[in-house]
Amino acid sequence: MQIAAIETSVVSLPFTMGGPHPLFAGQPWNRLEILLVKVETEDGLVGWGEAFGHTAIPATRAAIDTIVAPLMVGRDAGDIQALRRQILHGVHLLGRNGPFVYAFSGIEIALWDLLGKRSGQPLWRLLGGSEPSPMPAYASLLNYGDTALVARNTADACAAGYRAIKLHEVTREAVLAARTAPGAAEAAIMLDVNCAWSAPEARAMAASLAKDGLFWLEEPVWPPEDARGLARIRESGIPVSAGENVAGLFGFKTLIEAGAIDIAQPSVTKVGGIAEMQQVIQLCQAHGVEVAPHSPYFGPGFVATLHLASALLEKPLIEVLWLEMEANPFDPWVRAVDGMMRVPGGPGLGCDPDPETLARYAIGAPHRTERRQSP
Ligand SMILES: [Mg+2]
Image 1 (cartoon, rainbow, N blue to C red):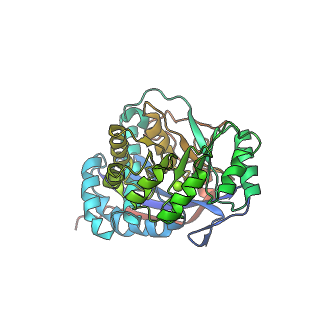
Image 2 (image 1 turned 45 degrees about the vertical axis):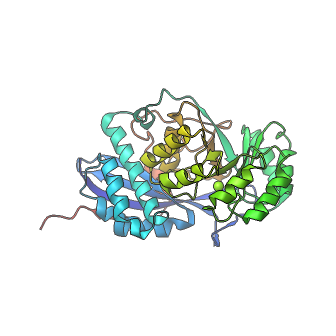
Image 3 (image 1 turned 90 degrees about the horizontal axis):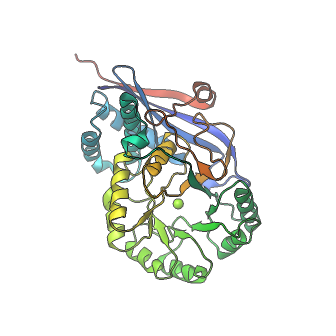
């Protein structure tokens, strides 16, 4: 069935995070924004996707509205593999990582939602999974830069049922504050430094953290492409994770061949969508590399992550940002309960947005790309 229209829109959700709101790429980050992609086929079926995200939304949205959506309307919505090849080839000169790949990722997720709805099957079933049970999540704390707030939010996350806590901090003091927080004695603690350190700095920090029992150390090295630099951090004995900034399947192939990572973190709204993510997961499985999806978002991309994870025999930890949203059109599927996530069982992603919540929190007007009429 042909794609009749692709529509982008943004919802903006107020949130609290147990501390002051940080900056994100220099911008105030006090609203949680989701870039929604709605794909309609000629028979009126609607699929939902999400493209990355946060302060990149204006750039990603422009990539969809001006370039990627016009390439895709009029095409068969079921031709996911062919579209993946042709569209990503068509835009590769514009960047193999970044807004154009994010744009395709968001539309591709919507195509899988459509495929599931058309066949009456949930996405986890299309991916070969068994009837899902709740999966463990980890609380991904935002950056506080304050050890007292790190300790308090770690304790609160443990009290909320999480058994694993990830910090976005850059000091050993923050790790020790989390480790000694009330209720955290048995929790797994991860540290994500978002590429804050040069390779030599990262080696020194890893040596100082080596006895602190970190479950993983995420993106310790700048730049993220420094595969050899990452590989040397593994010599500390701390498991190293990375992948949210990796360009597609071959980016992961490079990291794996360099022996750079213990844990791969593909991000479905960034890496190229569900099919690309599946290939990354299979590559990791073939090399004994664990997978822990990157999913700091709360729309159809997050729900797609749940389906991808539930289709795996060994369930990965699901990343859930530690924040409290006022509301979300995809409730209740985007919230952990006692540190666990449930997976929708309806066709496709199994959770269309609630129209009232969508209307209440939408900002600006949707942008619609329709199939050009024949002259
Ligand atoms: Mg990260």
